[in-house]
Length: 482
Image (cartoon, rainbow, N blue to C red):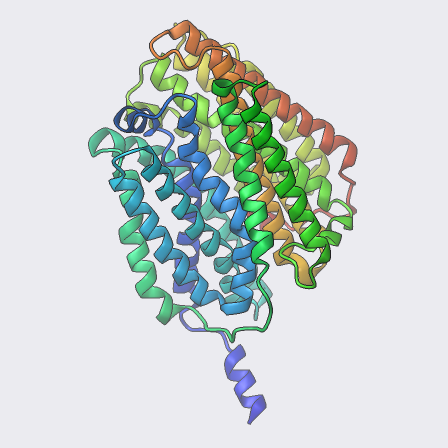
């Protein structure tokens, strides 16, 4: 009788492909929510009264919550069941989207964005777990499912930029958040019939570790964003930085002592894992500031309205999707993941250095398009192999932990890189709205700083990544975006 039950439980679900559509939608939405607000930022700033320096928190509030809670989301998924966490994540994302859309002032907007990030941190790891439960019975089906899941991420990034422009131009900026609500409602209704259930497991939740890492990251970002206004030599800046360092050190100490930690520290002894994660952190720290300030340059200096600004970034985002799905896997198979990563980071550095040559009376064709395409090609080539190296370096039974760590590294790098470049831009004049030379000078400085971060990534990848005998499978690598 037991054998019969086991066979029934392992039998493929007849609704697994419909379930995959929902899982891919989840990946699409959590990535889209990082990019859809870009074009809307000037309108949000105008309506809610954000300062130029604090505007980046509309992005950071989501990313800090998302990145800081990803490991916890994976742990909760294991303990309470992926289907339950998947539904809970959608419910929280819905609530955060509604709050961000109706926000009458700055603190409400940032709270809504943080709540969205919490929802995304529960959705992302549980979605991948559900995919493995549905398709793990057949390696061929699993490969196909992972490829489709992976393609949803660049599609989400592309759609976010374009939809953000369309919505902001023809509706109003709150609808960049409201668009999540009907999707979340459909997901909540469909999860029960489509997704497999799993028995909860016994284990503990590292609440203290979760609190320390999330608060530590938030404090570090806050200190860097506030520094231009408070002063780099002020007591406030250094006290908050010291608190951030103490919280992050406490997190490491807690992980070293707990029997069931949020993140087992010894996993970093795995060859290539630490190097690939540092590469991902620097990649996020370089790429997100470029995307953020390019949006502002198009609107605040070149005078583009929301829709043309979103459309102007479509060539870049389409190239990223093509690069991640088509070009990067071919390059990995031909020259290996390390060489592909280094090549991509070199191109990313060159593209952002080129963007730093923007001028107050520039044009899209001369100042933005060619440089952004070079940067986009570099991003697509560097991201896929470094991510695949991090995941494939771990033991198979630790693939979920490795995936959570590398996603966290990218999100942490994104938040800290944007905070740092916001400070650099402000110190070079980006806070003087209406003063086009000053704005351009600030944005140019941010591009130079982002190029320096990418160059650091070149050095890290070239000197610390080990050449592997075999490259990660292209479909496995492409599937892990997010």
